[in-house]
Length: 140
Image 1 (cartoon, one colour):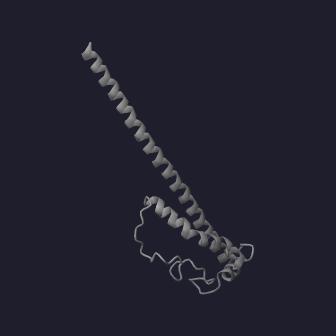
Image 2 (cartoon, helix red, strand yellow):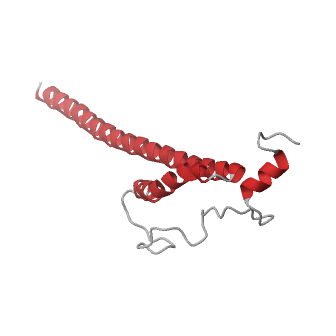
Image 3 (cartoon, one colour):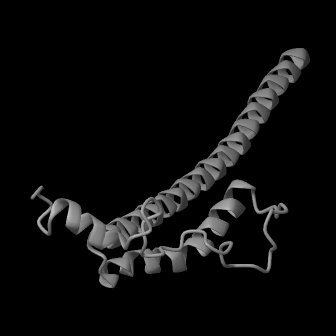
């Protein structure tokens, strides 16, 4: 009878330990899932900003009108903060040295700066486009 009671206590203790380990692992998995979801949210926001950069430059290149650079300006202002947030989330909060100076928040000179001129011809982008395709985007 004593041996059976001891064996029963051992089985119950083993079951309790297994349940405890399972709960600890489940909580760790929930934390990893929440972290992954936050990384995906930030990555989607970064992708949206890149699309806004592209949209602004494309609108300006086609029309030559400064008003189409508004999405580009807004995205360029928000891009460093979102990019650094994503890098911190992916690195697990560990700062890793970057190629650029940590005090420099602006892109290298000439990077992502619309010049208003075509790299191919040197002419203003919007004028070349309108001359080639017409103001309605149809061939003349």
